[in-house]
Amino acid sequence: MSATPQEVTLEAFLALPDDGVYRGRLREFHERPLLHDKWHSKTEARIAHLLLDWPDQLPPRTGEVHSGEVGCVLQHYPLTKVGIDAAYFDDNVANDESSGSSLVNGLPILAVEILSPSDTVEGLSEKVEVYLALGVAVVWIVDPRLQTIEVFNSDGEPHLFNTHQTLTAEP
Image: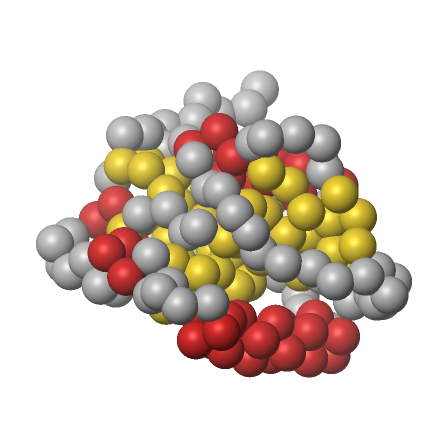
């Protein structure tokens, strides 16, 4: 018999070891312990670098890029906290200190998830659904080995890009 999931507050969660939270219940999106390989870390660094330059190329955009499994509270009730490989946040969200937490408190405009050996199709699909349902504008799923990016947004079907195509983060 399995235990009934229990809701957890942000304060209680921050006191726990590093686990995922899904809709107020402790939940792992990975079946195995989180493991990033060299392709993941190299890809994350390159994407973060490109995203850092992006706002300067398209004035009057302002915002902040975070990477390295940035802890983000997507919503408080029920508590939905995720770690995002790379994300672009509006200045208002990125600089919000009202919660007193070290986590980013709000939705990114762009969430980037990079495939790792520990990722599952089900876990990533669920994460994309959560992002879009809560209002994240664009989600990228990056496959470093196949060198593809699958783009999701709430406006339609996912689009697959490869190294021969140009990808933007619009809208």
